[in-house]
Image (cartoon, one colour):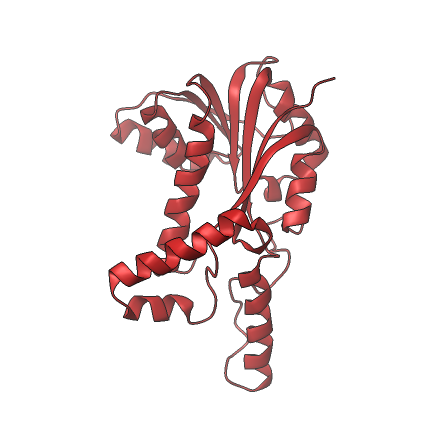
Length: 243
């Protein structure tokens, strides 16, 4: 992942926004699907939630366990896939899934499981990087121009492909929202960050005063929030569909 002020801002705001969306409900039981290294588990535990993390990777679960132990936090960690969640019906009040739905093989099965493990008044906060946002589209155009003119080599760049090799579908705004609402009802959709990894953007920001950089990034983030089709990340807040 690229480094720079834009990358740091994206990761921080993504955590802040999604944890705020989870915490909008009264604290209860929360399942983090695709919990990775456990960063969100730590954040939500500190906000009063009883959390459980699920991930298919034993390495990631080990990293999460070590992180949580260092923080003095006890959390249940389960190795499982999103398509087959080993929990009873209505076991959780909130489900959180960050940058996981675009890695799932059987998305239909996963989107059946998500509402099953939520209570009738539960909610899911699901987010993914958008490969159809303004930064992705503009970056691919700039890559093509640079390569045709010999300004750049052909090394793989962050937005080079519509579907990275480790992803299972094209993560655009329309596709993300369609998937999230295939079995649940949409409450809210918003975006996080603009222009992440745009060629030379991080380099330019690093040259500017920190206060100005924060002002620029926060201004663009407010635009992304209101116009998620343009954003670097799309966040959907959904609830189980009433029958």
